[in-house]
Amino acid sequence: MLNVYNILETIRMIQDECLDIRTITMGISLLDCIDTDIDRACEKVYEKIVSRAKELVPVGQRIEKEYGIPIINKRISVTPVAMLAAACPGQNPVKFAKALQRAADTCGVNFIGGYSALVHKGFSAGDLALIESIPEALDITQNICSSVNIGSTKSGINMDAVRLMGKIVRESAERTADRDCIGPAKLVVFCNAVEDNPFMAGAFHGVGEPDCEIHVGVSGPGVVRAALAKYPEASINELADIIKKTAFKITRMGQLVGARASELLGVPFGIVDLSLAPTPAIGDSVAHILEEMGLEQCGTHGTTACLAMLNDAVKKGGVMASSTVGGLSGAFIPVSEDAGMIDAAVAGTLSLEKLEAMTAVCSVGLDMIVVPGDITPETIAAIIADEAAIGMVNSKTTAVRLIPAIGRKEGETLEFGGLLGSGPVMPIKDKSSAKFISRGGRIPAPMQSLKN
Image 1 (spheres, rainbow, N blue to C red):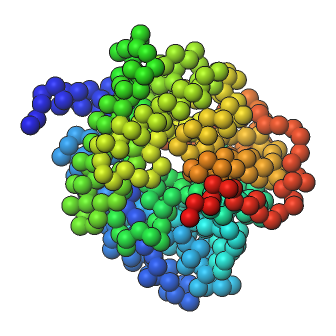
Image 2 (cartoon, rainbow, N blue to C red):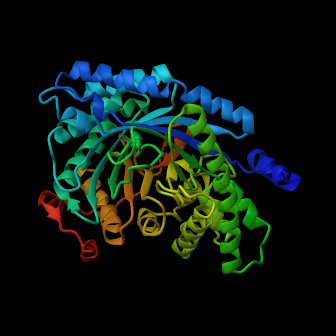
Image 3 (tube, rainbow, N blue to C red):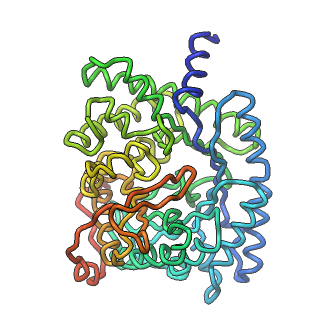
């Protein structure tokens, strides 16, 4: 039965507390587009995406009007393109990026993810060509996102791929230096990447997924912060209960939108990703949730404990609201996309080392962090390796999205605009990791990988 209080509460969440559906993402398999002729393959890719997703944006807009719920992004994820490139040896995979961009333009979506390779145990046909082409692909396109999975709990960490990605991230920043180094802002390096992630830049359509499906990514850090603000004297376990109840409400909204989108588009409903995804807007910050718990500023002592409790409570509340929770689900901490994180980084309270500790208990990893422009590829690779180790040992997804600010130094800022926000250049260690990175090889899988 409809309850007037619940209706008014939802309206208040949307109008005053930045509640939204962050994305509806259509996953599309491109396996049936594989062709030894790259031009023919690209045409198949374009036609498949457009035939499946031509109604995605109109359907999203219709749902917004029906329910009064903002849907910020409409996105597409596709089969890792390295698999298609494998059938076209000697050809430039950037042709696939251009086909994806053409499809994005036709469908009117915000992003297409899946210019990706999975190399956690080694390189197969197509992988190296795809990875080497990433800087060019991200330079000449606007809506294409890329990801590379370089490790997993089951396989260990491919350090040859880590070394290569240090170079690729740096080159991508250099190629887009005239646009505030936007290239690597669309590139994620994963350990334990998941196949049903609706969030960019790391979304790709896994080979274990159906031919086409719809995922929903919800948000709502502002709603959680506002709920906690009503109980300034609550104990920690009482705060956890408040967060669980709030996450339940947010996830139910995502379930409603996902089911309706599935019905209107005629494709299966995949998952609801209940991650708290912040924006640079005031009142839409994960950092401010942690501060509402009692921290003077995010990054001070106690931050990791607060984030662990938040992440756990979000998962417990959300999983009761939907039988299809998946993706990453928890709390994101992208520095440039979170007003509170930006303030803490500028003040020096939030350091790269503290962020690394926080990633051991949150959804993903070192996300949207701007580093000095003179950073070496080896140092980038070492940061990737550290974060991958956290994911590998803890059997969780971790990721790195670093933006070398070419020509800038600590204390300066890069401006990306939109959901990507702005990022202060954060300091890094000045001692070299080059010898470690140059060794190559593979960090073996940990003991906890032996679960059979």
